[in-house]
Length: 205
Image 1 (cartoon, rainbow, N blue to C red):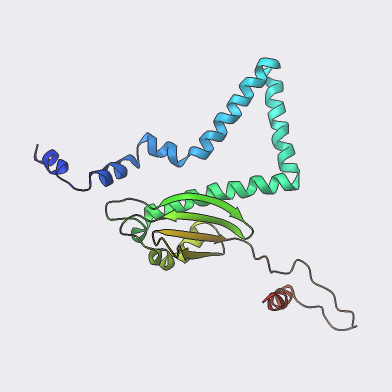
Image 2 (image 1 turned 180 degrees about the horizontal axis):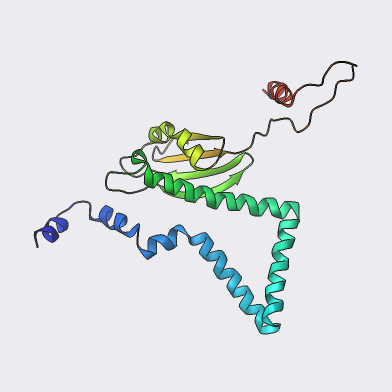
Protein backbone atom coordinates (compact mmCIF):
# COMPACT_ATOMS: atom_id res chain seq x y z
CA UNK A 1 0.00 0.00 0.00
CA UNK A 2 2.82 2.38 0.92
CA UNK A 3 4.75 1.55 -2.26
CA UNK A 4 1.76 2.32 -4.47
CA UNK A 5 1.17 5.56 -2.56
CA UNK A 6 4.80 6.64 -3.01
CA UNK A 7 4.65 5.74 -6.71
CA UNK A 8 1.54 7.88 -7.17
CA UNK A 9 3.34 10.82 -5.56
CA UNK A 10 6.42 10.45 -7.78
CA UNK A 11 6.95 13.43 -10.14
CA UNK A 12 8.54 11.10 -12.70
CA UNK A 13 5.66 8.74 -13.41
CA UNK A 14 6.06 9.11 -17.18
CA UNK A 15 9.76 8.23 -16.97
CA UNK A 16 8.95 5.13 -14.94
CA UNK A 17 6.32 4.07 -17.46
CA UNK A 18 8.72 4.56 -20.38
CA UNK A 19 11.43 2.53 -18.66
CA UNK A 20 8.98 -0.26 -17.82
CA UNK A 21 7.77 -0.28 -21.44
CA UNK A 22 11.34 -0.87 -22.64
CA UNK A 23 11.03 -4.61 -22.05
CA UNK A 24 7.36 -4.95 -22.98
CA UNK A 25 5.99 -6.30 -26.24
CA UNK A 26 5.30 -2.76 -27.48
CA UNK A 27 8.91 -1.73 -26.88
CA UNK A 28 10.25 -4.81 -28.63
CA UNK A 29 7.94 -4.25 -31.62
CA UNK A 30 9.06 -0.62 -31.86
CA UNK A 31 12.76 -1.56 -31.86
CA UNK A 32 12.23 -4.25 -34.51
CA UNK A 33 9.69 -2.29 -36.57
CA UNK A 34 11.77 -2.33 -39.76
CA UNK A 35 12.24 -6.09 -39.74
CA UNK A 36 8.59 -6.68 -38.86
CA UNK A 37 7.44 -4.36 -41.66
CA UNK A 38 9.67 -6.16 -44.18
CA UNK A 39 8.39 -9.56 -43.05
CA UNK A 40 4.76 -8.45 -43.26
CA UNK A 41 5.36 -6.98 -46.74
CA UNK A 42 6.88 -10.23 -48.00
CA UNK A 43 4.06 -12.25 -46.45
CA UNK A 44 1.42 -10.01 -48.04
CA UNK A 45 3.15 -10.22 -51.44
CA UNK A 46 3.39 -14.01 -51.17
CA UNK A 47 -0.30 -14.26 -50.25
CA UNK A 48 -1.30 -12.02 -53.17
CA UNK A 49 0.76 -14.04 -55.65
CA UNK A 50 -0.52 -17.35 -54.32
CA UNK A 51 -4.05 -16.35 -55.34
CA UNK A 52 -2.98 -16.19 -58.99
CA UNK A 53 -0.32 -18.93 -59.20
CA UNK A 54 0.60 -21.93 -57.02
CA UNK A 55 2.45 -21.26 -53.79
CA UNK A 56 5.81 -22.81 -54.90
CA UNK A 57 5.84 -20.61 -58.00
CA UNK A 58 4.95 -17.59 -55.88
CA UNK A 59 7.90 -18.26 -53.59
CA UNK A 60 10.13 -18.77 -56.62
CA UNK A 61 9.05 -15.41 -58.07
CA UNK A 62 9.82 -13.59 -54.83
CA UNK A 63 13.14 -15.40 -54.56
CA UNK A 64 13.99 -14.43 -58.12
CA UNK A 65 13.14 -10.81 -57.36
CA UNK A 66 15.51 -10.86 -54.39
CA UNK A 67 18.26 -12.38 -56.56
CA UNK A 68 17.77 -9.66 -59.18
CA UNK A 69 17.96 -6.94 -56.52
CA UNK A 70 21.21 -8.41 -55.19
CA UNK A 71 22.66 -8.95 -58.66
CA UNK A 72 22.22 -5.38 -59.94
CA UNK A 73 24.99 -3.20 -58.45
CA UNK A 74 22.86 -0.09 -57.94
CA UNK A 75 19.99 -1.89 -56.19
CA UNK A 76 22.45 -4.01 -54.21
CA UNK A 77 24.20 -0.92 -52.86
CA UNK A 78 20.82 0.68 -52.09
CA UNK A 79 19.64 -2.38 -50.15
CA UNK A 80 22.95 -2.92 -48.35
CA UNK A 81 23.12 0.68 -47.15
CA UNK A 82 19.62 0.38 -45.70
CA UNK A 83 20.63 -2.84 -43.98
CA UNK A 84 23.61 -1.03 -42.44
CA UNK A 85 21.27 1.72 -41.23
CA UNK A 86 19.10 -0.82 -39.43
CA UNK A 87 22.19 -2.52 -38.00
CA UNK A 88 23.60 0.79 -36.79
CA UNK A 89 20.31 1.70 -35.11
CA UNK A 90 20.27 -1.59 -33.21
CA UNK A 91 23.91 -1.26 -32.21
CA UNK A 92 23.39 2.33 -31.02
CA UNK A 93 20.39 1.23 -28.99
CA UNK A 94 22.44 -1.56 -27.40
CA UNK A 95 25.25 0.86 -26.57
CA UNK A 96 22.83 3.35 -25.03
CA UNK A 97 21.38 0.59 -22.88
CA UNK A 98 24.76 -0.72 -21.68
CA UNK A 99 26.68 2.54 -21.28
CA UNK A 100 25.75 4.37 -18.02
CA UNK A 101 26.72 7.80 -19.39
CA UNK A 102 24.37 7.44 -22.35
CA UNK A 103 21.10 6.94 -20.50
CA UNK A 104 19.46 8.69 -17.60
CA UNK A 105 19.52 7.47 -14.02
CA UNK A 106 15.95 6.27 -14.42
CA UNK A 107 16.99 4.20 -17.46
CA UNK A 108 15.57 6.33 -20.29
CA UNK A 109 17.54 5.95 -23.52
CA UNK A 110 18.30 8.60 -26.14
CA UNK A 111 15.83 8.46 -29.02
CA UNK A 112 17.12 7.77 -32.54
CA UNK A 113 14.83 10.04 -34.55
CA UNK A 114 16.06 8.90 -37.94
CA UNK A 115 19.08 7.32 -39.58
CA UNK A 116 19.98 7.44 -43.25
CA UNK A 117 22.93 6.47 -45.46
CA UNK A 118 25.57 8.99 -46.53
CA UNK A 119 28.61 8.63 -48.79
CA UNK A 120 30.96 7.63 -45.97
CA UNK A 121 28.54 5.55 -43.88
CA UNK A 122 25.40 6.46 -41.95
CA UNK A 123 24.09 9.59 -40.25
CA UNK A 124 21.82 9.39 -37.20
CA UNK A 125 19.88 12.22 -35.59
CA UNK A 126 19.48 11.57 -31.86
CA UNK A 127 17.28 13.26 -29.28
CA UNK A 128 18.93 13.51 -25.86
CA UNK A 129 16.81 12.95 -22.79
CA UNK A 130 17.02 15.27 -19.79
CA UNK A 131 20.32 14.48 -18.10
CA UNK A 132 22.23 13.65 -21.32
CA UNK A 133 24.18 16.12 -23.44
CA UNK A 134 26.26 16.14 -26.60
CA UNK A 135 29.50 16.02 -24.59
CA UNK A 136 28.49 12.56 -23.35
CA UNK A 137 28.47 11.38 -26.97
CA UNK A 138 31.86 13.03 -27.58
CA UNK A 139 33.32 11.12 -24.64
CA UNK A 140 31.99 7.86 -26.10
CA UNK A 141 32.82 8.40 -29.79
CA UNK A 142 35.27 5.49 -29.81
CA UNK A 143 32.69 3.19 -28.20
CA UNK A 144 30.08 4.27 -30.78
CA UNK A 145 32.45 3.47 -33.66
CA UNK A 146 33.31 0.08 -32.18
CA UNK A 147 29.66 -0.78 -31.48
CA UNK A 148 28.70 -0.01 -35.10
CA UNK A 149 31.70 -1.89 -36.56
CA UNK A 150 32.94 1.36 -38.13
CA UNK A 151 36.32 3.04 -38.44
CA UNK A 152 35.25 6.27 -36.75
CA UNK A 153 32.30 8.21 -35.32
CA UNK A 154 31.93 11.98 -35.47
CA UNK A 155 29.61 13.87 -33.15
CA UNK A 156 28.00 17.21 -34.03
CA UNK A 157 25.69 19.07 -31.67
CA UNK A 158 22.92 21.12 -33.21
CA UNK A 159 23.93 24.82 -33.06
CA UNK A 160 20.41 25.88 -32.09
CA UNK A 161 18.93 22.93 -30.16
CA UNK A 162 21.52 21.46 -27.80
CA UNK A 163 19.38 18.36 -27.15
CA UNK A 164 19.75 17.27 -30.79
CA UNK A 165 22.94 15.41 -31.69
CA UNK A 166 24.08 14.16 -35.09
CA UNK A 167 26.25 11.05 -35.17
CA UNK A 168 28.15 10.33 -38.39
CA UNK A 169 29.23 6.69 -38.54
CA UNK A 170 32.30 6.59 -40.80
CA UNK A 171 32.83 3.33 -42.69
CA UNK A 172 34.62 4.43 -45.88
CA UNK A 173 37.30 6.93 -46.84
CA UNK A 174 36.16 8.60 -50.06
CA UNK A 175 39.59 10.23 -50.53
CA UNK A 176 41.48 6.94 -50.52
CA UNK A 177 43.12 5.95 -53.80
CA UNK A 178 41.29 3.27 -55.76
CA UNK A 179 44.32 2.14 -57.78
CA UNK A 180 48.08 2.78 -57.85
CA UNK A 181 49.75 4.24 -60.94
CA UNK A 182 52.93 2.38 -61.96
CA UNK A 183 56.09 4.39 -62.47
CA UNK A 184 57.13 5.12 -66.06
CA UNK A 185 60.83 5.25 -65.10
CA UNK A 186 62.69 1.91 -65.03
CA UNK A 187 63.82 0.75 -61.62
CA UNK A 188 61.56 3.11 -59.67
CA UNK A 189 58.53 1.67 -57.86
CA UNK A 190 55.14 3.30 -58.22
CA UNK A 191 53.55 5.21 -55.34
CA UNK A 192 51.96 3.20 -52.57
CA UNK A 193 48.14 3.35 -52.12
CA UNK A 194 48.57 5.12 -48.78
CA UNK A 195 50.81 7.78 -50.29
CA UNK A 196 48.45 8.23 -53.23
CA UNK A 197 45.58 8.72 -50.83
CA UNK A 198 47.51 11.37 -48.89
CA UNK A 199 48.49 13.20 -52.09
CA UNK A 200 44.88 13.15 -53.29
CA UNK A 201 43.69 14.48 -49.95
CA UNK A 202 46.29 17.27 -50.04
CA UNK A 203 45.22 18.36 -53.50
CA UNK A 204 41.54 18.50 -52.44
CA UNK A 205 42.19 20.64 -49.38
